[in-house]
Image (cartoon, rainbow, N blue to C red; front, side):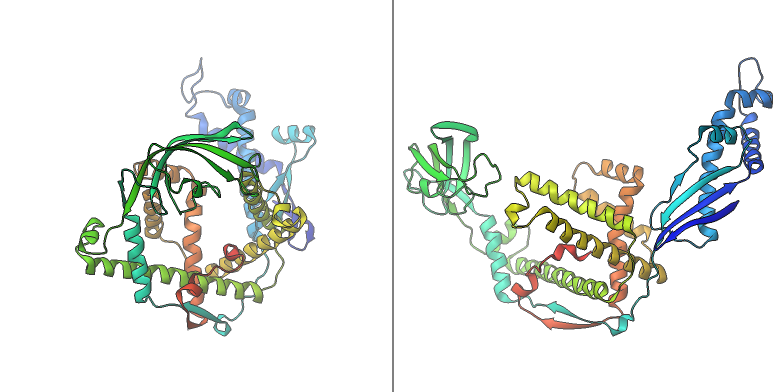
Length: 452
């Protein structure tokens, strides 16, 4: 095999690989010998088909297999010999001249092909022990526990029908309604047996207000206006009326926070419920603290490393982000102008996010490789079990999906690997705990989701 570098520009490489015709011929003959004892053709006993006849019947397809296998092996060997670390799967380009291909297939010419790829950049990692970051931490106080218990009680609220009651905030009203614009019913504006808890703001402005004071059996016309930013553009900003029939008014029955509520929620008593709530809050606080310190670490890594990025990796990352953004806007019926920016400004912003993600991915990959960090089978199995639990009754199909899709399994492995690498780095960084209150701990920073 002869390998020649034909182009080198930054991280881009192009190689020409030539494999002698006699090596191709040897591989072809070896493949023929593999199958000759297994082939059975009409008019011949098994294993007694003449080689020339085999060539006539299977020659072209076998040569195709040989060439494909040879290209795969030799391209890997070429990269290995040159100690190249491709950032993406190399692109293989065969000669365009069909006559040349035919000669190669016939064993009359050398096989040559071009490889083009981008290599991973050289990354000089900073001394992690010099990095200083803050980890916000908050204590679970009595106020937080009481709020959590109140929320549990609120979610356990039941409603009791109240005959003759005029609906107030907090009451549940069951209604049928027909929505109209300019006196004509509009699509999706009618429903029956709808439950509305007044004061929760679940409907467009004016609708719930128009139901206050209503009683079961009453019919009334409610006026309301769709918001200017309503997702359905044909309704946005328009005045509407709703012919409403009130079928039922029910008052809330909020349970007391006591042993009975605790037992209803699966705890032995109120004391045990408080313990469970406290532990749950601690886990939530720890998770939020972890998210913050990880973000701070990634910010530092991004700021302190500067190296060329493989263009194709950035392009692919950007395309994935851009597809999600545009699909989200389309589903919401919005445009970039609605958000106060142009499409070009948005593209520039999201490309920077793509660059950040690629840079951080390469840094974490470099750290993980040097530290020989691996995802164990037990860790992967636990992640798979957790994933399957999200689909009750469909667990077997989830397992089969991941067994048949290595790419999906790799996506399951990636976040585990990332967290292990982050832990490895945090073990070397100077981390200082900073006491904050709950509001500060859970406050979302700008572009928080762009952390990785």
